Image 1 (cartoon, rainbow, N blue to C red):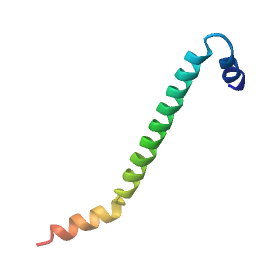
Image 2 (cartoon, rainbow, N blue to C red):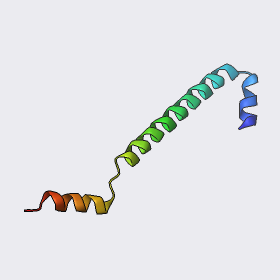
Image 3 (cartoon, one colour):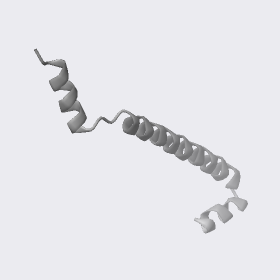
Image 4 (spheres, rainbow, N blue to C red):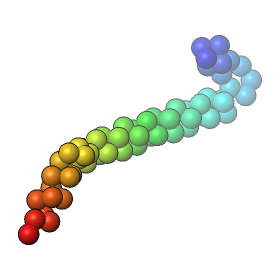
Length: 61
């Protein structure tokens, strides 16, 4: 990867540098989205035993 980034100094390097910057930005955005999605999923997790107990408590007559 270092070789690829060093090749930006040659002819047509500015276009590749811009493409690389867009790529880095999209990877960062995707990682951030995944991080927060996983965080929300884990925050909303309810153990099976707790769900069963809650269900049983709510349906007692």
